[in-house]
Image (cartoon, rainbow, N blue to C red; front, top):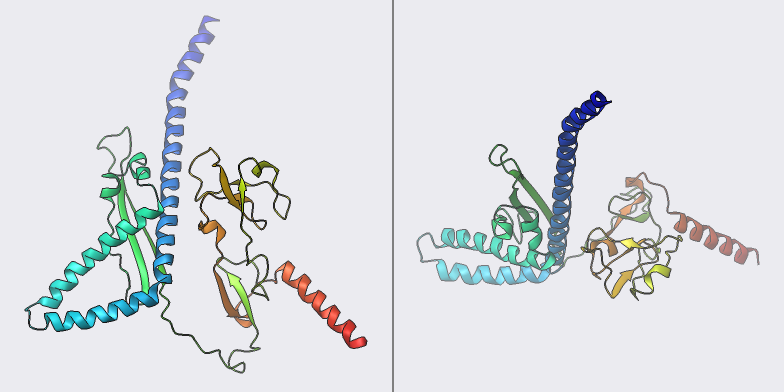
Length: 295
């Protein structure tokens, strides 16, 4: 009996440290993943909001460039120096702008070297050569418990959004684009839609109280769970936002989970099935048209 207990003690002494290390490593990986997810959400939203004001940005930049050229035309290396300082000014301005979309404490909790001050925005720009707003961040995460045995983990993330130029593109000739029929798709689309007013594309957002939330159900009969992007605490706030088309509740009305990015494309250019709601509506309209014709 004593021999068996001794063997169990030895096995526990060997297995327990390995199990503990495995759990700690998994927790560390999950922590990094959540940090990256929040940072990516923040820089993506910042890019989209800046790009949506791109027409005004282009006008202001054009006016600034004219004045700058007149001011620096007689200054040796004036344009080069201006470009150097303006590039760093853009990086710093974007760093301050992104701060409005996330809590900088997550960098300290995520063991980022230097916290938010240690995050580099070099390479970011309000407008690049492709007329896009680009935000690029780089930071280093300290690996706990190992000292200098393992170097800090370098993480680089980026986001970009096309700037609206104020110009509209003329529709293509139907003869040039096959059938000429256009449909609507979203990012990472699994289906296409024949109407821009499809309820899958046009979300209805409602504000409900914390007390009402447990009794609410989506149009598919699902309960509402916390959004992975905007709900940072387990406690439910007094008021949240929900959509009948989704199954998440949100604390931010402008959360990425409440947005739909819709593009109009040619039906010939995609290989996707039709949305079930659009198919049902189209079939109903077809039957009504046939009934009207028979009368």
